[in-house]
Length: 280
Ligand code: PAF
Image 1: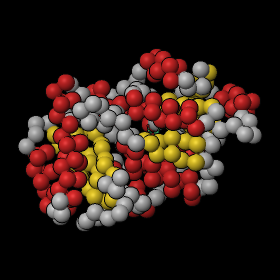
Image 2: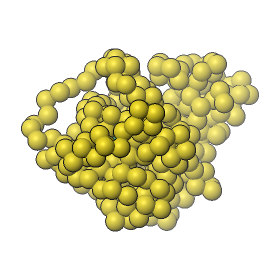
Image 3: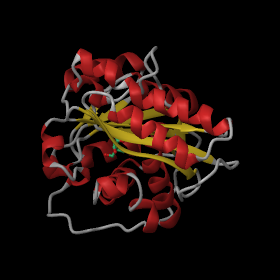
Image 4: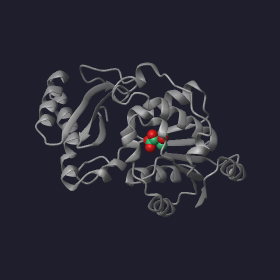
């Protein structure tokens, strides 16, 4: 695997390998890789001729400086995992390479970046859109792979790509879960073993909510039930449980043909998110 820290040397290399009929797949990450990221690499490996992965902990998307400071850094282990997964190119730039000047560009996606995660993490999606724009311009991939766990991020990036005419096909890959159902996340490594067990309440809440909705119970009632379950768990703080439209995340009162349940909350000091698409 070739490793680049500088934009120009990565561009020069990609220029050499870019072929008229060959596809470049791109997996942007913030490192601390797990099986969820490896599933994105595997999908790119299967569908494209070259796979480029980036590891960059993007400061502009962290609304909470403590969260940025605690973000896990496991670069040596990540490199070994990428080599093993058959990744061809790794781009791991420094902050001065990515942001040589103070950033002033802000994105506004209307409701899409104000609701759900946007309400609890103001400015987060503007930072995501900024770094994803930069990365797509640097790598110029044919396909880019994102995880369904960050479903709102996937919709934001889809809007960014459509509105700014990026020439890339986006792929949203299913959530990868631990055997007990916990969604894979780089943040899971920050949980103690007791918190790790408690974190399951979010996936269990989604499953219970889905069953209750399918049994015809109104979402408002289901939401109150989940809230009360979470309130009775030590160290759990529910931020939201929402039923929303998969196309634009507008909130729903009842299940439709394109609905998704989304949940977010804290286990101790670690913030986790999860979701279930109901129309599968
Ligand atoms: O999902 C992530 O890991 C990040 O938000 C991304 C897309 C790599 C941008 O920093």
